[in-house]
Amino acid sequence: MKALTWHGKGDIRCERVADPSIEDDRDIIIRVTSCAICGSDLHLMDGYMPTMEAGDVLGHETMGVVEEVGRGHSKFKRGDRVVVPFNISCGECFFCQKKLYSLCDRSNRNAEQAAKAMGQSPAGLFGYSHMLGGYSGGQAEFLRVPFADVGPIRVPDELDDEQVLFLSDIFPTGYMAAENAEIEPGDTVAVWGCGPVGQFAIQSAWMLGAGRVIAIDKVPERLAMARDHGRAETLDFSEVDIYDALMEMTGGRGPDRCIDCVGTESSPGASFDAALDQVKAALFLGTDRPHVLREAIFCCRKGGTISVPGVYVGLLDKLPFGAAMNKGLTFRMGQTHTQRYLEPLLEKVVSAEIDPPSSSPTAPASMQAPTSTRRSATSRTAASRWS
Image 1 (cartoon, rainbow, N blue to C red):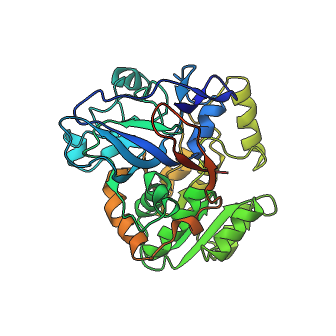
Image 2 (image 1 turned 60 degrees about the vertical axis):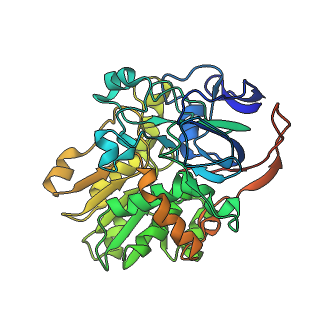
């Protein structure tokens, strides 16, 4: 089959690799009909995520049609259309039983390696380094899905791929980000980053009762979408000082809830500290560029909540933790417990409470996938980036 593979920083290739096969009775194999590029994939392309190996197949936002099922699998049958969560969860361990699926104890095949870097291992992820399991990703014609009786969800035939593809990651991620922000009715919510996750966080903030949403970015198209589709007030960080603007907009109090939808690769043009972070990273003196997190800490009102769906990969420098402590801020973060949200968010799509394609800055563009040893497949790809 053909797949997108990683061969080093800035070196992503489309090449032929071996077709996947059933390895466990709970597996399924899907023929990919749609996939997407996540902002997190850029951390791989830019060389920020360690333990990648040449030839690794990328991609963790995938859906398709079931082609094969393991002997012990009974949830799906050949021909079912399914969306696959980006994280892999067993459904049986302590954390899965608590519905903390991204913390699964059993799905990371290289858990000891992750524990050395983080203290404990999170769940395995598709297409996202050997430290997180070394699983092949879904930017390919076919994908093996482990623990498939727990993760994927069957989707109605009347829904197009574009309406449900984002359930694989960014819709649940944006929704959990808003949920983690602990929004109370009437709250002012500030969202840094108007990429796809930011757009879904904006939409989700309204669903959860926000009284006001302020979106921050510098890309005109993203800001326009946040205004036109997200009904948010917008700030261009290249034109205004964000702290001063937010204080003026909130009467000096600051936003009640702040959501960092940017993460490790904050724009180097955002401020002097972001530019300095980029220099440190280039000289291997640092890993992450946490400008947005620093700014959110200063901007958030006293006693407020900061939600962090934006991915960080290493050590953060010059974080104003004293300000966070003395302001009494609450932090909630983590990889998305995707399986927890699939059913309720699918219901929102079916009921037309939200139209995911209109919530994403870049709609999927059709392309014809090449023929593999199995049947040829039509694939679509949606590009996305957190600013």
